[in-house]
Length: 255
Image (cartoon, rainbow, N blue to C red):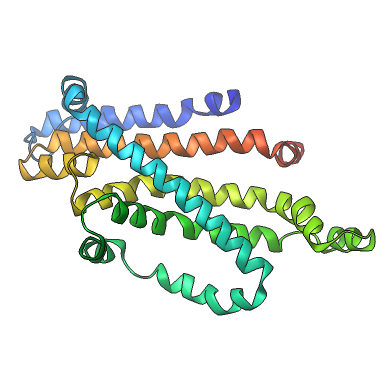
């Protein structure tokens, strides 16, 4: 965690520099606020409008978190089933890839027609966005187990179940966490897209209302909130990964 904080000052410095350039360009060119507000205007709106924006932020965070957890569980279960049953993997893996070629923004209205405007279609959208990276990453991780270690355990009398849980699954953990980090960032955007379908609260609703009233500063507040939530979810997964996969981290540091 300390190393993450020590390395974090460089991107923060670059981000601060970009904000300074943005501020100077807007002020110098005298760009209208409705077209492109200055960062100072955006941050001022975020502070003054916090009481109004907070319920939307909390709503999006909640459904993004729930959807991510559901998507992660489904992704891991699907990966386990496809890996342990090769016939199913050969039959359904191409269909999983095809399922990701359907744009979510196109599928979302159909989910509203089928399931209404409640929580279910939102969870389906987020789950569809989240589960695929985890499934693919986990399957790749299972296949990366060294063959000589697997052969050694089989020679020692280990069952297939023991080989999987004591060797293949631990070796796949770094890949699984890579998929989790990707899905964690996707979950926030999936939540926002699901809120565009129809919701009473959420960043997606806030953004839609702001854009329709030409409050560009509020649109940027929503964009920055999405970026912050995605980064926060990503960092949480990184911290958990460093706690769980200690052996892998030590090996990487020794290289």
